[in-house]
Length: 212
Image (cartoon, rainbow, N blue to C red; front, top):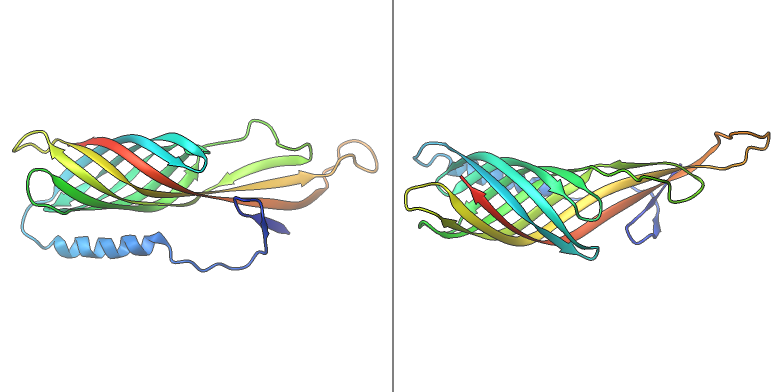
């Protein structure tokens, strides 16, 4: 038997949950990008490196990302990863879609990322005397934002980027308990129902980067 708690500590009954995943939004954006791919022009590789901050109810933390993929005209589709230090350190792995909103050398763009958030955090010691172990598990990750691109030269691809938006991060943690002492003495392996905590974090994100 397992009990589930949300981030505020309230215990919820375990029931199947049906939610529209952000992957559907990414699929729609990918279809639009594929249609736009019929436009004339060669495919070109682009790499973007970001550094920024994430701020929310649990304070402010740094983040780092690298996104690599292909672009044609005003559309870009790539794969990204990085390090997310908000509350519990993790490694997001996501697909990234961006759309330039203005034609010129500089201009605004929209971005959407969606994928999975893998934990990179382990508690150094149990929180309670009866905790036998704690395991973090992956959860959903997605973000959306508006950015501005400033190209460093008229004909080069190198550009400076500044983006702001919203980011969602989910991690899950499961506690397993034992009850000492054993009635017959010595170590007692008896286990009680585990608790699972769902950490759902809403953050504001601000990033600066360079693409080439």
